Amino acid sequence: MSRKIEPIYVKLSKLIVLRRKELGMTQFQLAKKIKVSRSYLANIELGRQRIYLHHLLKLEQALESTLLLKFVKQAIQTRPLGKGCIHD
Image (cartoon, rainbow, N blue to C red; front, side, top):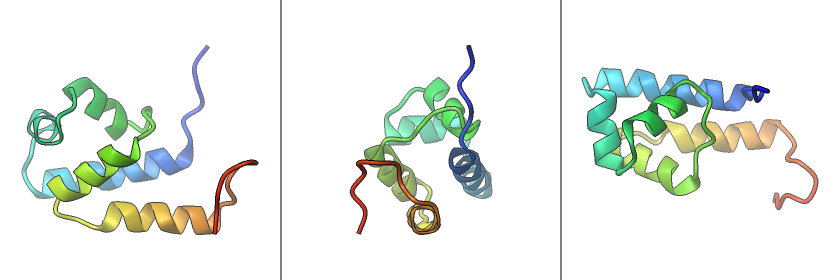
């Protein structure tokens, strides 16, 4: 049984890939910089892997960009969170 890929992760993954390529980095280089496996990063870039907040912060730092957190914040504001989630 395959899990449905959520649109937010697909959109976020495209931002990550675009910025990584702009910087001329390989998946291996970026994975090493943020201390994750290349396969984990590949799954993030395919939108198949949910991203932990601490990895998102490391990605922002490694990619020298604030676009990722801005995107997530905008997505949260435009899409209601599930029942039981904390949201201000």
